[in-house]
Length: 180
Image (cartoon, one colour):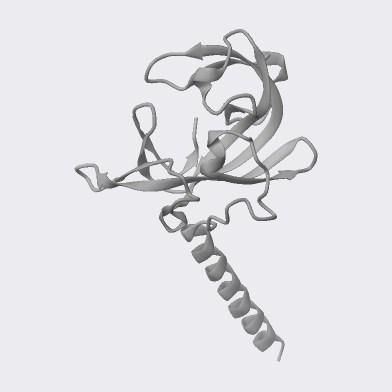
């Protein structure tokens, strides 16, 4: 009798794990910032992110990608950030994001690269992977930011969910795991 219960519990647990793995592989669907993923940066990143405040000065959520319609010679899909409110069916989770409230000084933008930010090295989190900064409000795109000005925002840790080539200020191979 006791063995039977263990087998039933184990089978039920396997079904729950399989359902969770399927949902995770598919990614969280775009819901246009419907609660609970209602946090907004109030600039262009909001077209391809959904997140929610967690634990005070923290953020958690997703960055979305859309297919470009092309792939590499070995079949790896080439993706980009799209406007998920225009075509929600085309959007899928590219990264799981975690964010910590920070401020950073804008250092400028080098053509073909992401904007550069200066953050106090003593204030950096001990946990590895917080390598991306995104500002709040201020301006739609980085070209409206003032060099030498400090902006409020979030230091982001991005964890890729799949393998793809990301076309954004150049093409970058992304593999599952922390995106450094």
